Length: 240
Image 1: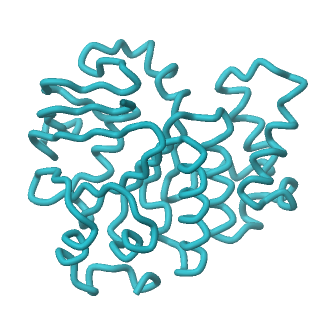
Image 2: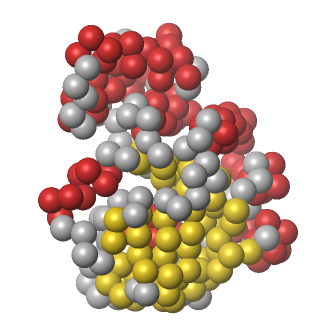
């Protein structure tokens, strides 16, 4: 099991409780949704996985078999190297090309095979359908293209887990479908994907396990139950 939270409590850095009594499990190759309205704790839960926020109280809180309650700060980088993170706002380096963005990540994460570095970059760009954009600057790309590069960056080190925080929120419906198909394909190849969203229309098109953040609690639900919780007015305009 990649992630195993049992009776975990999650707090903001200022001590404010976000989610209480959380039971949350993710296995190899699973596609897992965390759904809920803005401010219900989706991003906070994701941040605990890569240790930007902390689980302060729990019966069990493990990621890749590492106990988060006792994990030392010096070991967090090694934990993060086993996962890829896709942010809603892309977070590409604006002063360098697509290829140099990916090169920077490989070097920063300790890539050792100098001869294979360029080949790995070409491989992931091909995988996300962006092989012809390697020399472009981020500002020359559309939002969907930037998100594809963000996904390429996330899979560079062949992670066991992809964390995607609202990866389709700022995209039109057609572009969002392309991103979802890409993430689904990554999951089929063996990496687990944990994705937060408030677009419940995705749940039926791209099935997965669903957890819902509501009223300070996380509950495992069916896609149908999740969809019934939201009205169409809760959805972003470009997903309706």
